[in-house]
Amino acid sequence: MLQQETKPTAALQSLAEELQSHILNFLPYRDILRCTSVCKALRQTYISCSELQYIVELGGQQLLPVPRTFDNINRTSISKRLQLLRDDAHAWFNFDIHSFETISIPVHNKMWVVNGHLCLWERHEDSTTIFPILPKPSQYTIERDRSPMSLRSDPNAYGFDVLMDPAQNLIAVAYATVDDHFQWDDERIYIDLGTLDKGGIHPQAVGRTLFRSELPGIQSGDRTSTDLGKLKLKCFGRHIALWHSLQITCEYLDERLWELQIWDWQHSTISRSVLSATINPACEEAIDFCFLGNDRLLIFSDDMKLYLIEDTSKAPQLLACFLLPVSLTRIQCITSMDDISHSSRPQILAQQTMWTSDPEHQLLSVITFSPSLIFIISTRIFFDLDLFEGMLEAIPWTNWGPLNVRVFQTPSRRNIAVGGNRVLLAFPADDTTGIWHYPQKYRLHVMDFSPLAVERRQGLGRVVKEPSTVEITESRTGESFKLAETLTLTTSLPYVEVMLDLDKTFGYRGFERMWIDRDRIYFYHGSNQLEVVEITPRAAAAAKSITSSS
Image 1 (cartoon, rainbow, N blue to C red):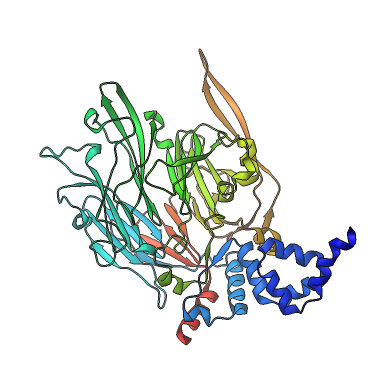
Image 2 (image 1 turned 180 degrees about the vertical axis):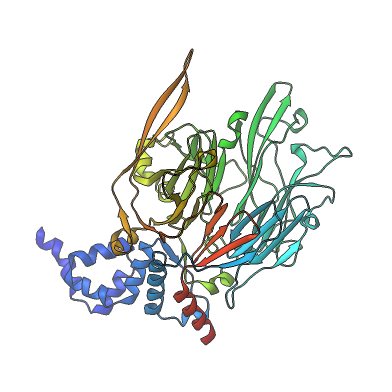
């Protein structure tokens, strides 16, 4: 029996090194490492093969290669790509936080950073602005200053929300048509689509306007909406989702609901993919949602419900329900906005990168209020449901949370940014507090949750594998008095942490918002200034040289 088990290994070892490398090339990166750890010959093959090392480096950093469709990528050797990838990873643990450039920001109500662009929406002036932030050579960019009014079918409509997606050259406007008394209801809410750069109908959109469907079980003519409440508009790839709360009054119903509808905007202007549920008005802020890749949606309320959204002609399919360890009154979901994985035009954006984040292996940050906590969640659990076989209806926190999450206490919701498998988080520098009892000074920490960061970069940061515990106090109402219950949350998702320059601290208003992408950090300080810190100057210089030579 033992001889039979060793024959395949001997046969593999007898092959030429090129053939060994070719065979190993078909394996996942973890299997490649396993093979090289038990066999000296295969270990030598791995050491002498840049392509195998590149596969391991991509997998260990939980990245995907961008398709080789352009000369500037094809002409870059595997060994050069491997070195650039390693340089990028190391640079995140050794950069100068004092070295930054500043750009001015126009007046706005809403702002966000995506794909190297700054997106602004000024509701009162009904205007949108998008422009590249310190564009790199040969980078595909969009620059536009316009009114979203031109997109709408009704020029007198009231705009609720705007999203801009430079990766898809897409702008979407959620609005409501109004009557002669400037009144509207939920039946008159629409979403209009257009292109960011030139305006007009998006060439990949099936039509200009997306139309909402009726709520399940409630006929359109039987209901009135007295208050539209909150509204959120989000997009990922071919899916657009609109969430809003409303008051439903009809013959047999008078309650507050939330409704979420999803469109495949490239194939249909009408969708039957609708979810709805009752809502406690006091906890209206405790609901949020986010896309996970191209076919999954996660909704946060009293728990986390995971849905499959492959077919928008029917309601989303519930895949699993993940129970939360605490009750929440407010919640905010922060995801990594990757510009390649969900782009409808990867051939244009791929000119600037050779790899992109794997949507199945990223980080999701959930910020809660009362208690004030930050949950850093690995998205892998939402794609490997076999781990929870037999309990998909309601997965207890103890079965999914401790090994796949890190929980931190924080006094501020502004002090976090997520990108791929990295987190930028600000912790209080000391115990000194100021007005409203907030810490006066914060210090920035970079955390890398990718497997290779934990396994190989001990010299560049503090490896955290041991569990950490957070204690919180929850108030629960008894029959005649309030009860205070202390909960203990212990989590152990591994990561590598580097505390940035000890001389650099931020005040409470020092960072109204932060964003990170592949090679930059963006700080908005609540004024008209945006600070930009470059993380990978060597990789950027190399990429520029490659582009010039092409």
